[in-house]
Length: 418
Image (cartoon, rainbow, N blue to C red; front, side):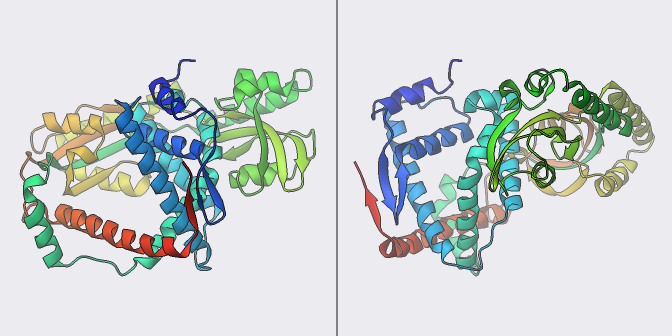
């Protein structure tokens, strides 16, 4: 497969293709590959596929190295603090949210996997240790800066100094959303459960690996026959792990329900607190019947608000309490840059107190009502106090953190290698 990072890697190979130690913090070595990976992820976050020139790459590599050193210094200090506790669930939730944001940025899971040049599940497994250290460091940072804040005079001074360089405020909206989810019915869930039961029965004749390649919805493992490799206790989803560690070698579980869907789990091998499993995953996605059910609900709601536009907000509030979805009434200003492009596009076309045609999202239909709108404007202390205060806070926080890092770096052994 042609890699999207071909230009990036051609630059990197000019630095020598072999891996090696570029720095040591305490007794922890920072490898060239880690610096390259950090630079690669920065590229992904910026939505780029390559660096524009060697100078830009050299700068990013230097920044990535310093960032890794700073992270490690904070982690070394955090390890000494017994109040800092990070659980497996903390790490999994952080990684899931991070990946979800990347998927939104790149349009689909397939696009992201193409950019990463690996499966999302593989990326999540490889990221676990780094994210654990990151969260630990962040919590230590939050603790040492707990009482940090900025004064009114700090904000005014920052604005006086930087007012000419502040960007224009984007368009702002107040709006309501009614989110009508397309939810898998109990019949759909039962259908998928029974399908996996039938697979389990037929595996007596056909191999588990072949079944996984044909039927599993996990793109990261299906091509390998569902093989997840050896994984330590504490790194799997709780429900999956509880069942998996209870299996005997060669035993296949009944369907196990997790946030990812239903799994059939095959125990391949056990080595102490490590197990090797294979699985077949069926995600619980809605079918056409579920879509039609949501569409009928949409038509009813559309009829109600057509007759009485004032009912829109009431319905949005009810839905926001009933469902964990995007239903909301936003009476505070929201920048266009902070919302989904589809929603912002619809809002930009609406008149006050009118609502949109249905917006099709992933597994839901949205109706959006415009409450109020403000055009682009220059930032002032009157119209952008929170925005300017946040910029002031970030600048002062960065300065304070750098001061602390300079102190910590004198307490911890650090060596650079050319």
